[in-house]
Image (tube, rainbow, N blue to C red; front, side, top):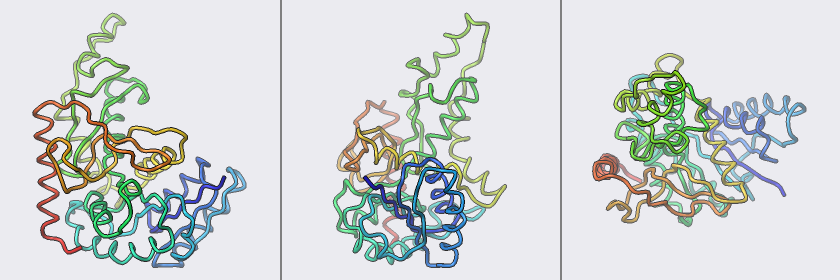
Length: 315
């Protein structure tokens, strides 16, 4: 059975996502769409010429009409985040861009699952819910999947343990108000703060990590990368591919995608990241993990930060 993915935006994130998808070999057809058709043609051709060494895939540049019968549509189009800029500084500009895209692509791919990657991702995901007319299960933002990967990478580095053994999440906005619900963080089912005590018998005495330092690292990583190389795209591309593989999977997976809140944790009418079930039918709903009172307060604060921005936007 074919697996068709359309990527809107052939900039750094869109191109890196297409490249990672070809390397991983889980799509059979990839369409790249960009207002700059020459850029999309060049990126598709460059990747296509390496396909003989990968799993067979058809990758090409096209128009919105070529999105027909897509299983997944990935939205990466938008103004890039510049050094010193927050994700929310981009809000109205990228809302305006997305406003032009939504009716054009949903006309041809009404049954696709839409993955919003462009920033500010939570606000653009909210916009997609409010204006596209598509069922909620077909829409999700990449949310804090990347932030969660950054968090797990830092914990893994600190304790010198495989990243696959680290289970921890970033909740809330993909941005400055995000937070780590530390009550859920564990390494192989051992709470992250108890882990050092459990390995002392092996001659490894390690001080517990400092929560605030790890959260600061997670929250500021994107800005540091942008300051050093001008953009972030490799890790987000890998994260989006991880999400797409879950959507093509046979069973549901748990991921911190950005979805609409409908009273969970006392939050409504905003899109942000908590733990959700995603799979071949798209967004299957939230997993109401037990949070401490302090963590619920942080989640509500993140929601309020996003709502304050939304109030000033024109969708």
